[in-house]
Length: 277
Image 1: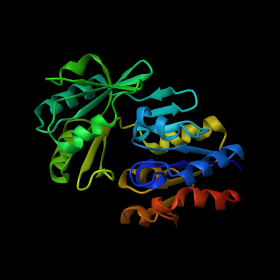
Image 2: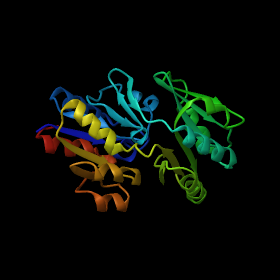
Image 3: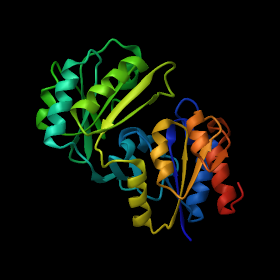
């Protein structure tokens, strides 16, 4: 039986500060050398996932942007994407125009992403963008109106803010579209929440199942910490919550491993695969 180990990143595989610890990096390299199949299932884009694994790698397609993208990390290539329909794009851009919060609108451009946004003085938003500039895999485009991305292939939106405001925006999305939404605490910003909207067909679970098919795995073990990992848990064979996960995720998991501060994911994989670290 071949197992695919699929880990969420922020709050799960990554240590605080959104970094891969030296121990986890060394463990992943050892897993790959031993033929153990490991990948990521995350809301992150290629632009921020590629640098994280520069010192090691992943040997199965990754589910990025909550399953909107299936991405080949070694070849740095988008294998598949799930864009909005024309009706969904029109509706979501109209909503973006009406909201007081600056929304990030992601679109496909060849093998990279374009992100459209309105200028914002919200400090977490400013930091979020500044930490993600200067990469060939994602470019940022400040706009005055959200009508500007209307000619692009929109695949995703994301917004940062207070939970209450984002909850109202989520209600607007559900009234106007059939898009799937995710609303959860942003682990890298104290007191900040994130709202995302993407194709109803996109889930981490569906993308990871496709990854398992590609690499010939017949067992999927998934690791997570936050509410957007629950659909992944439902679609895998074994679910593992890190000890620092939110209560609902721990309750839904088959097992609980060590915290992300203690390299819990790689420790659990090593025991399950019979590998010593």
